[in-house]
Image (tube, rainbow, N blue to C red; front, top):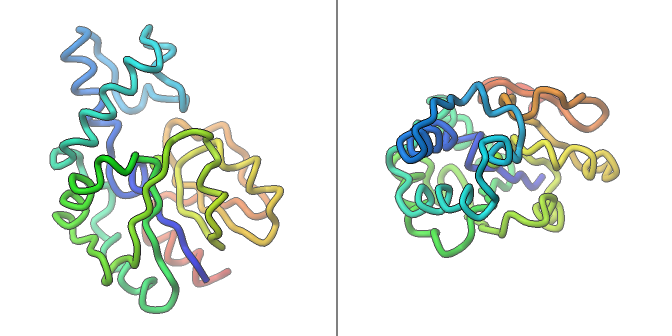
Length: 188
Ligand SMILES: [Mg+2]
């Protein structure tokens, strides 16, 4: 089984760092829990280019982003011993070295926790499905409808404020932490 693990929203809590930078720059007081939509910056009165500029700044230096679940390295290591685990992220390839450094720092290491680091553009939103994985661990609500049409594949939707209105059914399951991810994969 080939498994694709996302970075942002699954391993790294990028939105926490995003809110800190955004609030400092624009004098706002946004918090992670307020991010209830994928395209949240439209509601924050910035256009997509301006909104993405902050993401790119964080991609260039990811060391301050909080790690989501301290159980992830051990569980990923076990999964990668049994299955073929890659990290598949919509961070663009330009930022590979910075991403690699941050993952290494959190004990997410190539050939131990994962085999390959695959970086893609963030558009179209379902670009990851063009890569052939059997199971995806991802927080992106835009993957849900397309993957429901691909019955042989599975999505473990990592619970986040921006995917709360998604109904998880058929080949889509909601997971809240890495222990649940491990359990669900063993059950499948
Ligand atoms: Mg993500």
